[in-house]
Length: 429
Image 1 (cartoon, rainbow, N blue to C red):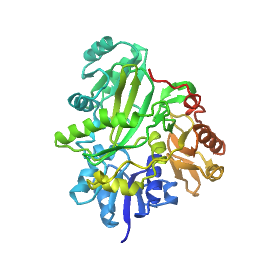
Image 2: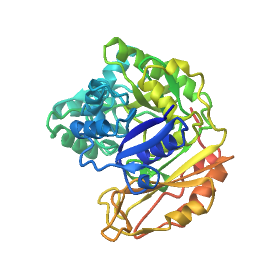
Image 3: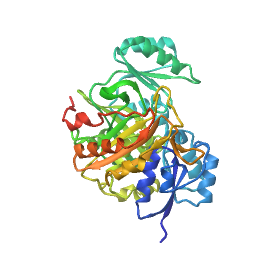
Image 4: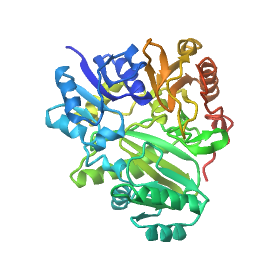
């Protein structure tokens, strides 16, 4: 029997990781990415696509190539309803409907669902006026946590002790069309990411990960989309089961009860506080860069898993097969990131980096080919260097040896990804 043709929608490091894992599944004959990137182009066919939220254009590609499964990587096409259009034309899709993707598309909606499902989360106020913002900031106190209600590419959150900075961010969010802002209580304790694959009923969790949002070592500097990650978390050994039992399963059950079943990857962002785990946020897709390390540990064939989820057959799976080792991801960012990323700079050393160890691979996050076919930077986060190892120290060492081989003018990376965990310094209250 012929294998599947799988279409991956997106162009970043997450999509490169998905394409790489899908291509390794014997049940998958071919992987196609739209629009893809230069890294994906080495392992899969890339189809031009100007706008990942253009459902008609995506449908044309899926129809022309007679794909068996569409895997939607980023959040924007999910919230825009691309999955709905594809399903209406008979395609299997791994990714939620527009209605279900509101778990990420609206922080206020997510809070409403969590309340109905009795899921533990931070106290919060949904604000639509400056006066409501002032009252919320006063009620919840410092540190202030202010979140744009809508999509913000991972950069819509401000956590600060500065009341003026918190208020300015809130007012900027309110200034957008239909602007709403969520002001939350600050949650103490380390944060963790748990990615759950679901068919709308059954929920299976990948190994938890921890990512690093601040641009600089020691969690200094502004927030980013993420500067690195590692998995598993030895300091939270039962977290995956806990996240399913107390958060993901009740949320999936509530979404199904509402008539908007969630099919796809549910990201559960948790703060492990002194009062127990609390949900920081939901995403409606695999994370980036933390999703890459969770996927690196998965040994269950990814195409078979996602196809079963899209087809409502996830109950056929027992426990996922997980590698016993560790994975570390270090992000190489462009000059000026995150405030004003510089693009168009030549990148060299990628092949040399991968040659440092068979346990290292480089994922393209923001790259392109220039007029001469040379690899150049095309975004703020440029490359993900992923390494695996029998211990966290081995995985870290391999990742940083590989990073040292990459040349990008003005490029920068954090040097402390997973360092505290390696030293046994991460604790849960």
